[in-house]
Image (cartoon, rainbow, N blue to C red; front, side):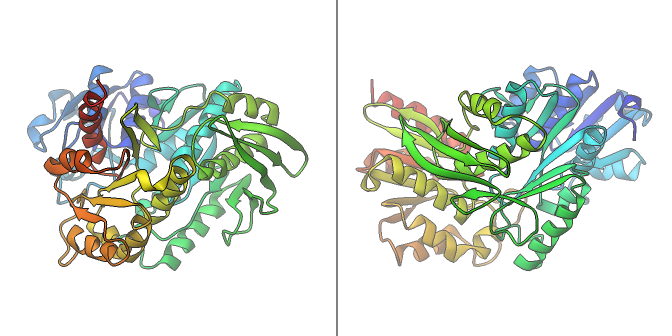
Length: 452
């Protein structure tokens, strides 16, 4: 497929983090971009400010006259949108438009580049953003499509050339099998998306299928049962981080590669898990010839990803941290990080479960990971694309947590601010992949008043 022949692109689900990056790129290519999303959000607001037309009504009436002709028109949809559940998608599919899934368009865009794809059930957004930042700062001709907002760029798209592309290889709906990576990385294969995969073994098997797609090099976290170049922390990996210490709120560590050693690399973001993410990005960048010296220099200015242990407040009265964690492994990483920085007796965790199926599949693990925090508030489940599942509720999750840690409560969104203020904790960590990311903005504004 030749994108030069496409003049207009309509995105169904344009407000999604991956979809919006593609919309921005098509807009950058001077295509006429428009789209639909179910809800207005900060992402859709920013796209509108950039000149992209967006409708929030799932009706055929939003299809403007300039899309009536199928010629030179491309329709792109997210796999979270299903046929027979979306009138617009049904219309375009039934009327012989050129329709692609998000991953298919990403495959087309990256087909004529050296594609560097980051896969894994955790860590791919941060790893991709670190890699994109390294390439940008090192002068490599590359464009990066991210699944989060890179703080350095205020965007999920890092423009910088077309020789290389950095993409997140999304395992949801097996979408990453649509890509054609030259260099691929797998950060983790922990069970997730069991609404899509038949079993954890099915998930691992699909990651193996993805691994085979890498034509030039495959890099995996040490311990993943796939033969490849490895990275790790003090694990004897091919790319190994060693002598890790914290200096002036930054991680400092040495690196051993298959050919050299480099001392005192400094990473100015919190979390030991981010040292792992950095090692993955370092291995990928180094494999295309970026020197460890240039990588170390680039990392000094790396500022992280929005909603990945993002500080919303650090005042005399409050510390408010916002994180996208929505899987038990990710919650454990947040707990480990906050424990390094603060007395855990002072920490209140607020969690919004994401998806009924994920809550059902990992209820016991969620209870264990959340019970580590001194006090826990649990919001109702954010359904996203799903309908309720009988017997799967936040109430049941709270009951499981209470068996381990009795300092847990169910809280409604409109009660959250009051509950936080009534707590004796002053370090608040808000976690989840739903609209808790919007709630935290209001909490931030209200708590900031307490310091005035």
